[in-house]
Image 1 (tube, rainbow, N blue to C red):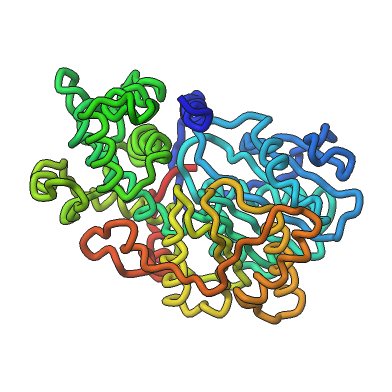
Image 2: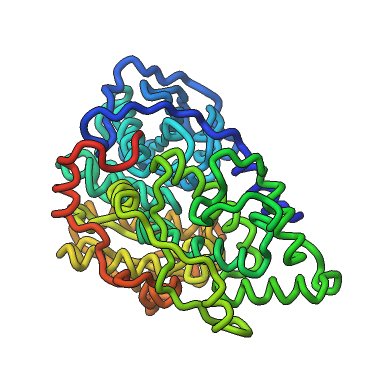
Length: 476
């Protein structure tokens, strides 16, 4: 098994946090508590931050861990970071690891702060509230920064975009937003490719569940009482496809199954394991722990193609429709309205294998339909990674956002590409911008469900109505 696959397995295998939530009144936005009393203690910085900053750690009143770093040569501004995932449990090392990964922000002179989120599992509004909490904690400890920027990566892009649409409506809290490889299609459509993988995988492999095991609806991911581990799921993937074996060592049936699954799902072979783990364990978390057993997913009306026998595939693949209430709750929690009120800059790898670049097309249309297109600038690079792009590009992006906020002059994809070289002189990691690139529609990569090509999924008016109905959403 590859190191990446082992890492994915370890991530999902972490014990899920147990949450006993009592709904009282409205569910969204999740409550932001007064941060007073949450102490930030001086702590060792990660090795790559070293003596360049003073680091602080602690735990807020909701139980979320946090890490802050203030550079010795602080430029007076703050980056509030929303991390990816979601993982199924967090501890005090979670945000330290995020700081280590995003040390470039400290290198560029910015103070940095991040929350682990109060619990593992799914919950975008909850994570947005915890992200706002850590900003409050920073202000109470160090005073109001000259400027405050949000940064969201992957799932954290969804979180940071939600912060921008909720808490950032209040003037003076945030000044700009940077979203990198962000999951910007939202919750109700952002996982449809994994729904497709779940049913296509079962059609070809028939081992999750096996015929001899109790059957269950595939939209559950796994039954609530399943004892399967990530290693078990990956073992079944290997059994069916030989994915961890050299091609010469696979049986004819394994190679055929692997080729068919890759062709139909439009996923690269090296992402199947991670996506299958999310399509089992994350779906299980969403359905049973967040939506009281309701089904937010559907694939009825989807036409699958790319196989050797599309007719047989479409006739035999499992079909189901989303439960209206569950889908509404997931949408309220995680979909975006596009009603931004401050500059938003995005950076996305064109060949991102996990969060497809077409998420940017969904966000572009969402923001445009909300009448806020002038507040969005999108940039794209010819890279093939999801988790780590060029350090020079990250430094260039936060500088471009800062310049936009300071000057009021909206940059272009070309001007941002042209400015990267100066940062590459320091970081030597390369600049791979393609300023002429524009992604095709989300439906060009992820098969749309009937009626699923209109954006935004949730309008600002719908959000306003739903926010006044007790019980809608996902409990924090």
